[in-house]
Amino acid sequence: MQDCSPRAIVEADVDAIAHNFHLAQQAAPDCRIIAVVKANAYGHGLEQVVRRLDVEHPAFFGVANAAEARQVQAAGCSTRPFLLGPNPPTERAEIAASGWGFTISSIEEADHFASLAADAQRVLPVHLAVDTGMGREGFLPIELSEALAHLQGLPSLRVDGVMSHMPVADEDEVFSRAQAELFEQCVREVALHAKPRYVHLAASAGLLRYKIPCANTVRPGLMLYGIAPVHCAWGKQLRPTLRLRAAVTLVRSLPAGHSISYGCCYVAPHSLRVATIGIGYADGWRRHLSGKRAHALIRGQLCPLLGRVTMDQVMADVSAAPGVQAGDMAELIGPSLSVEQLAMQANTIPWDILTGLGPRLTRVSCSFS
Ligand SMILES: *Cc1c(COP(=O)(O)O)cnc(C)c1O
Image (cartoon, rainbow, N blue to C red; front, side, top):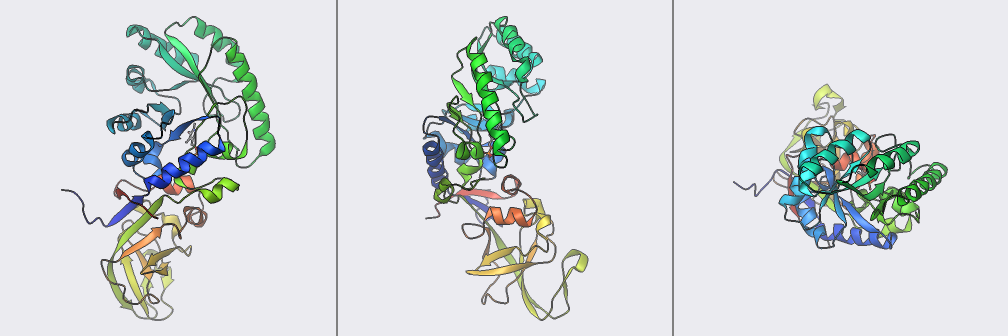
């Protein structure tokens, strides 16, 4: 049965995501876009996001694993998935058979994919990953010539892309500029042996901050979801894309001195109207938000959350919001309750807050404007 009155819900404005996609395109006008939709489209609901973005013809949809690539395919998209990171041997046969984009970082992966491709009598396009500082994937620049020579002996693979990833695009300009230069040298070396169609280095922060002349493709994730990881003019034009709401399940008055939630860390200083809200850390409403002055918006009023976040429920002081009753929806993330602010309060980063929004939440698409 369809959950038509969900207790806690993520509303995604997919047109706002498309708007942000166009801003990414304007910020990197000469580049194709790999629209990153991994982790359930950063919590927004993968299916509804890829259906909307498919219309904009990205170069690929960036995903983390074969299961996510399958979800993109099941949504009926004409845009192919691209696996952003290295793939374990167990997923490679499916990847080789599917036509999905993927990277190789080692001779071992190259040989494995080459033999899978040869068995199927196919030539597989691959993106060569180079490690220019991330330390997570890719051939080291000094290994590149040997790798390219090895690939010459693997006719079932064709180098279709060169990629790398920036670890400090949002923090360290000296490092990032040196990295972009090193990447350009690598691209030049690859170009002596192959004609890669896709050259990509930048995610959101990199594309907003740097012009990388040798690149013709970018991989924005976070900025599609309305958040700029660096201060820039584009940031102000991004539209918010996600609202998180949960039902008030109970409203009561508690007397002064009554404690609230596990640990009894919060004690009512005077009598309070307290609402219990049906969302908790099992939904991705972080336990680290306990005691951090996070708020819920209920009946237009910002209501402080009280005490520790529990697995399925959290309490709010609704003394200043008259008329609150069970069944009201409390907004926890939205245009006026930013993910950035929450991330700060929970001692983490916006990516972590968004991708932590759990499978128990219902996802719908709606328009905020
Ligand atoms: C997740 C990821 C991205 C997207 O990063 P954002 O900072 O969210 O834009 C881009 N490239 C790779 C390789 C990734 O893993």
